[in-house]
Structures are given as C-alpha cells and as structure tokens.
Length: 273
Length: 323
Image 1 (spheres, one colour):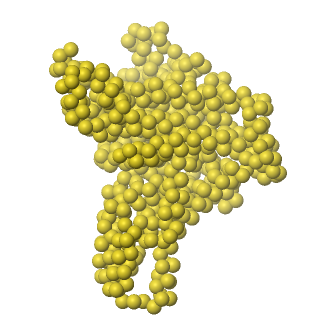
Image 2 (image 1 turned 45 degrees about the vertical axis):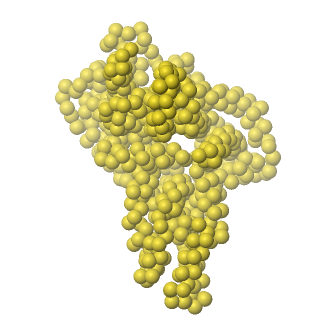
Image 3 (image 1 turned 180 degrees about the horizontal axis):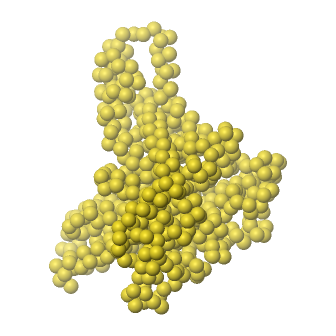
C-alpha cells in the first residue's frame, strides 16, 4: 500500500467512529424537538416541525425547574467548598513543616484508592441520625468528603512547584498567613483551580448514586435523580424523555465547547486517581 | 529541601520583629485551622464510614440496629447460603465478563484509534474532543438514552437496521438474556472510549520519534514496529487503563440500573455485585439482617477493588524508580 493511500484511509475510519460517538447525542437533541408520535413512527428522520413544546412541558409539568435549581445549588456549594478547603489544606501541607505533614498527606492519598460508595450504608445511617436525609446538604457533605483527596493531591503538586520566596516577601510586607494564601497564592493557582473545579463539576453534576440513596422527595431531586422519576412517570412520552435527557446534558456540553482544553487536561489528570 | 526550609525559618527569625513566645505559638495554633475543614470532612464522612462498614460486617443486625458480634458469620452466609451464594456467583461472573468485554472492545478499539490520531493527521484536537463527548453525559443519562435507542419496537437502532435492509438483524438487544450483558458492555465502551483514547495518546506521545526512525533504517515492518516498539513502550498507559477498567467493572452500577433495573433483568442476566449490594442494603431482599450481609458484601467488593488498586500503585512506584 502506498504511503499516501495509507494516510488517506485514516480519515474515513476516524470519521466513521466519530459519527458513532456523536450520533446518539445528536439523536437525543434531535428527538427532543420532535412530537411524540413522530419519534415513535420515524425515530431517525429530521423533525417535520421544530418544536420547543417538549422542553416547556418538561420544565413546567415535570418539575424540572426545581431539579435544575437543586443541581445548581448542590454543584456550586460542593465545588466552592472542595476548592476552598482543599487548597487551604494543601497550602498547609506544602508550606509549613509540621512533623505530621507527611503522614497526613499519605492519609489523604489513601482516599484516592478507596471506593467510597461502599461506605454508603454507614453514611446513610449517619445522615439519618443527623437528620440530613432528604436534604440537599447531605449530598454537599459527601461530595466534599469524597473529593477532597483528589483536590489536595493536585493542589499539593502545584504548591510544590511554586517558589517559597513569594510567601517570604509577602510576610516581610506584613501579610499574615491567611493573607498570603488569599492574596498571593490563590490568584496564581487559577489554572489548577479550574482543572479541579471542572473534574468535580462533571462528577457532582452527573452523580446519580448519592441522590438515589439520600433523597426521597421529588421536590429535592437533582437532575440525574429527576431522570428516574421522569422515566418512571412518562415512559410512553418519549418526546418528554428526550427533552429531559437533553436538559440534563446541555450544560456540560456547552461548558465543554467553551473550555475543551481544560476539560481534557482535567480528566487526564484525574486518571491518576 | 529540608535544609532550605530551615534556612528560611532562620532568615525569618532574624528579619521579622520577634513576637513573644506566647504570641508565636498562638500563631502556630491558628495555622491548623487551614487543615481542619478538609480533614474533618474527609475523616468524618469518608474514613469513619468505611471503617464502620468493616466493623458492621462482623455484626448481626435487626433492621438498622446493630446487635451481636458474630465473627465471620455474614461472610459465610454470603458464600454458602441460598439464595445469596447463587446470586453472588452469578453477579460476580457478570462483573468478570464485564471487565473482559470492556477490555476487548473499549481498550482495543481505543488503542487503535489513538494510534490513528497520533499519526500525522490533521484535526487531531478535533477528533480528541469528539471521542470525549459521551463522557460528559451522566451515566444515568447514557443508560436511559440507550434504553430508548435500543427499544425493540420504536428504538432508533432497529429502525436503522430495517432501513438499510438488515431487518433480520433487528433484535430485542436488552430484552434477550443472551445479548443484554454484551449490549451493556458495548454501551459502556461507547461512553468511556474517549477517556481511554486520551490516556493512550499521552502514552504514545511519550515515545521518542528517533526510535521509529532507527527501526525504519533497520528495515522493520509496520507490524513489527507496533509489536516491538509501540506496544511495549506504551505499556504503562495500557496497564493504567486496564486497572481503571477493572475497578470500573467491579463498581459498575448506574448503567445497569438505568437500562435493566435494580435486579439486572431480564432474569438476572445482567446482575452485578453493586446491584446485589444495593438490593441487600436498600431493597427488600431480606429485612431482618440485610445490613450485616450488605456490609459483608461491601467489604468483599472493597477487597477486590483495593487489591487491584494496590497492584496499580505498586506499578506506579516501580515506574517512578525506573525513570
């Protein structure tokens, strides 16, 4: 086979597999703007009439507006606290020389290899005792607890690469330790904050397992759990199902299109986990 | 490093106005507040529950209340008592098939695609991004989406097959116990392939170009270069992906739950250990002592997964030393 032919043959292969990767997602959005009958009779065709009705119905009738709000609330608070607590802890572990630091770092790293879902039974009982079952705060708590190790791991690596002279000169300027963290370090660590934030955002936004266990009140559903009620209640109205799936996926896809580089970098960093 | 830190402290002591000893130690105490929030959440809601799960597996339960210490009784029942042992073996077998099936489909395909993307082609970042797209969806969304696409009567796949004249291929993919598990494995491969491609690409990019040039001068064929240079040199990334796939296969829950329900239908043909655990712990398999049995199952799963992770950590360490 000549070299140019070999080179040429690569594109059709890649394109065929790209289509396989994209088509189901495309079909989801396509079906979400079709009336139900059309989806059922001709699932592959383009919509004869474009309609946003499905979205409006799902938004109003199926309580999706509150699912979205719940997801936003849980994701925003979880990610804020994960970033804040973990960066402070990593700052402590990398900047000061307490004798237990090596041990604590190792202790956090253990969390990277523990399959946390297996602690769900004791967690459930704890939440029951704390009166947090059926509360969105229970989700925020487990997301913080579960994601701190990875964030500490990334931030610690970042701080190690940052010269300590910076802190020193700030100290001479009269900054206290928290001001050093807040005014000097934090602005410098934006790229790693973005990466950790994105990895956790995908995980938290898409999580289904913890809401399934902790939340039993439809009004408190996050989007993925809302999907379960939607599929339970409207299993014959595929137009609504597709619209629900699309609403659930749209935010991440839009974010990805805006910052695909950070997404890809972040999730490859996550591989170490 | 240590010396440097000491120097810094010394300089600091010389230059900074000396606070009184009391004030200094007050300041040191204040520093611990940096560590505390992360540590409290991590210990309170991750380490403590995991340890509790271990302890609980040695106890009998009445509903949610812990009763007596019964040693390994829960484990023994799980492995020897009907119906638990049958369900366990059945589900465990599916986890193993899930793992092997994912390696064969997702990893092999991802490696081939990574090779293509890594060769000199245009639009490399574009293809990377496209293959990565499915990973942005929630697993539960993927499961529900494909349960619609694979629906035997109205689903897109069977309609497509009929449209292109392959009507006899149309099949109730998820309804037939013979094909259901493999169908789920393929869906899982669709979902995770982009991530595998990224990891493999990182591995392939680390191989220096000169090696290939030297091999070409020696007259090595393309296949020979693949087998003797590319695959051995990309071995770290292959190992990482294999181990991650193993962990993922034994943790798998959402995809099967969304597509086949909590009992891994039809007829338990797609049941996996995490579903069994879920039914034990939160379903109504056995009201009385389900918590003890569930905890024992969690510990077994924990040990399976941690063994794999430990092997991977060992592997990472060795790699670091070699470099």
